[in-house]
Amino acid sequence: MTSTFPGLAGAWRRLIAPLLLIALALGLAGCGVNNIPTNEEKAKAAWSDVLNQYQRRAELIPNLVETVKGYAQHESQVLTQVTEARAKATSIKVDASTITDPEQFKQFQQAQSQLSGALGRLIAVSEAYPDLKANQNFLALQAQIEGTENRIAVARRDYIEAVRVYNTELRTFPGVLWASTLYRANKPMETFTIPDEQTKAPQVKFN
Image (cartoon, rainbow, N blue to C red):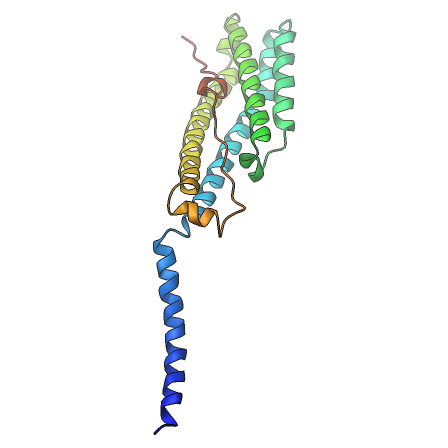
């Protein structure tokens, strides 16, 4: 009999150990241990959408510049400003690490803001050229820019909300416990701090 009990005890230990691990895992999940990486991935996905929409806008600009140039060649200064602002905006290296680097994020914002301003001036120039305003190619570009502007606004809004949730998780209980232990490498993410109108493509309306 005495030889049986040690065997039973060992069997119980082997059975209980995985059960305890499962219980611990469930307990940790219930305490939000997965919230930080989950929210991080959502914020990164939202950032990718922001970049995609700004890239779409950048791709529309060369055709817009060429169309305006055909009707307003003497507006060379404005055309040059748009071209240079686009070149600067697209030359800035951005990736997933940008959103945790305040300086890189600031450069990205400033470049997009400058491009928005230059694009706004280009659109304003078109008001002085009735033939340009009636051009079908220009009208098509106008519609695409307006659509892209709306998508930029939505993407920015979604990104700002995703970052708010992620940053809040890092700073509040119980997330702050995991941030100081399991996820010490995770940093708060940057968000847009300048007015929407400075980073969006301007409204293009012909009345």
